[in-house]
Amino acid sequence: MMNRRKFLQMSTAGVAAGAVGLGLPGTASAQTGAPPGTVGAPIRSYSGTDLDNWEMVLGDGLWTASGQAPPAVSDLAASHYGSHSTLSANVWQRGVMAHNINFRRIIDDEALNNVHVGSCEFRLPYLPEVGGWPNNAQTIEGGLFIWDGAGKRKDIGVGFQWLLNPWMADQGDIRYWHRKQAGAWKTGGYLAPDMQWHTIEFVVDPTRNSGTVKIDGVQISTHWVAENKDGWGTETAARLQMELISMWPGDNATAPSHQTEFRNWSWDWYTPA
Image 1 (cartoon, rainbow, N blue to C red):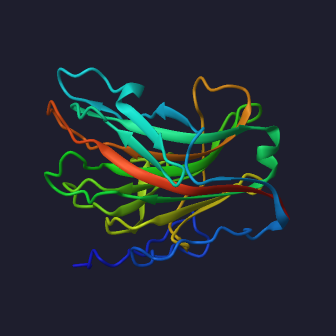
Image 2 (cartoon, rainbow, N blue to C red):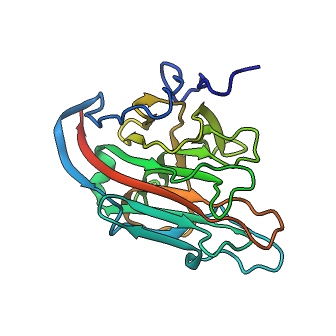
Image 3 (tube, rainbow, N blue to C red):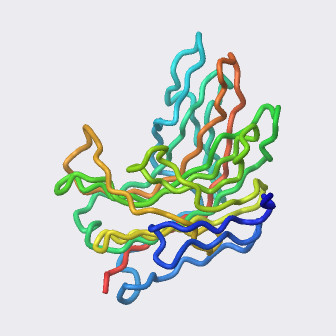
């Protein structure tokens, strides 16, 4: 049987040279740099030590147990400390699964003409475990996407998910967003749950319809996604987003909260070669 402490090596069409397993947990943070196929220094740079002034919305990873009101924005929280931010989901420990999405959005037609490199550090402040209370976890997620509302009306980019539910046999799997196939999420690597800081990095090149995801500097399996979004606007809007989903409660009246810390995000725009 495969040792789950080793990182999986997967293959996917989303990585030209094949996917590479992740390094050991707790490795040093990666340094974001200019990706191949770009010219010169960044033409724009955005960064912060926490997620203050990001937008917060309720995502679609939701569940409601019998007798409970559906999840709402009031089940989410974002606290900013200067050195880092703590995002929370299911803050009232109700019988719901709540999805907290925080994102930085830039509305600009030029977003489709540049290569984007976004990164952020994240950390669990506790270890998910069976019966864990008051905090436990379903996922940590994130992505970098560009909404082409004025043209093809497609949301394009890449996303990842770290599966953390301790009741699931595939806890620790790193997944990539693959909307066009059944199941949506596909396994691209493995990272044992820990309380270390890790760095997620996204590269999105809308001029070549390509994208990559790295964790702690090592590329994982990924997939370029372009999908329709009903009811979205006519603007061109790029967004860097960090997310978490609280634990699935089944039909229980209560469920744990989920918290994740984020810090030191950056987002650079480059001219394609």
